[in-house]
Amino acid sequence: MLRVMIILLGTPLVLVILLKFVNPPFWGWEISRTLFPPEGYPSKIKHEWVPISDISDFMTLAVIASEDQRFPVHWGVDFHALFSVIENSGESGPSRGASTITQQTAKNVFLFPSHTYVRKAYELYISFLLELIWGKERIMETYLNVVEFGPGIYGVEAASEHYFGIPASRLSRSQAAQLAVVLPNPYKMEPSPMTYYVSQRTHWVLRQMRNLGRIEL
Image (tube, rainbow, N blue to C red; front, side):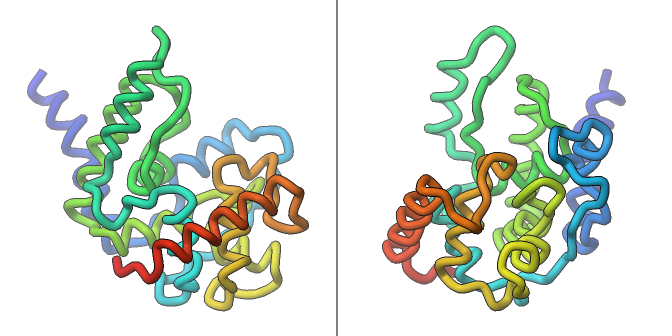
C-alpha cells in the first residue's frame, strides 16, 4: 500500500519538476482529443510554443479577467467555488467545474477529461504542486501554450495566427479579450467573426480588464 501511494503521489511530483524546465511535447488533453476526437476535430492540429515574453500582456490580463480574477493571489484553488460545486454535485461526481487557471493547467497537461472525484483530487494535488514548484509565470506560460482555442488549435500563438493573422506578441486588447471569451467552449464559439454573444462577452471582459489594471505575476 505504501509503495502504491509513493507511486501515485511521486509520479506527478517528478513530472511537475521536469516540466518546470522542459516544455511538454504533448499533454493529456491533446492525447485524449487525438484518441477520441470530437466532432469537428481536424486531422492535423495547429500549435507553436512561445515563451511568455513573446505573448502580449493583454492576453495574460484577458484570461485572468475572464477565467480567474484571483489568479495572482490564490494558491491554485478557489475553495468557495469548489465547495459550491461539491455541494450541488450528484452521485456520479461533479457535473461542472469551478477551476482556476492553475487547475485548468493541471487538467490540460497532466490529466484526461472525466467527471470523477478521483480525477478532481489529482487535479487539486497537482495544482498545489504547480503553485509551489512552478510559480505563477510558468503556470500562465504553460496554460496559454496548451489550452485549446478552437478544434485542434492549441496555444495562443496558433490561435493568433489562425484568427487574426498575427503573432501572439502583437495581440491588441480587444483581440486578446475575444480569444479569452471562447475558452469555456471553443467548439461552439469563435473569436472572429463575432456573434452577438461573443461580442457582449468581449465587452464584459474588456471592462474587467480595465478594472483590474496592470497585473504582475
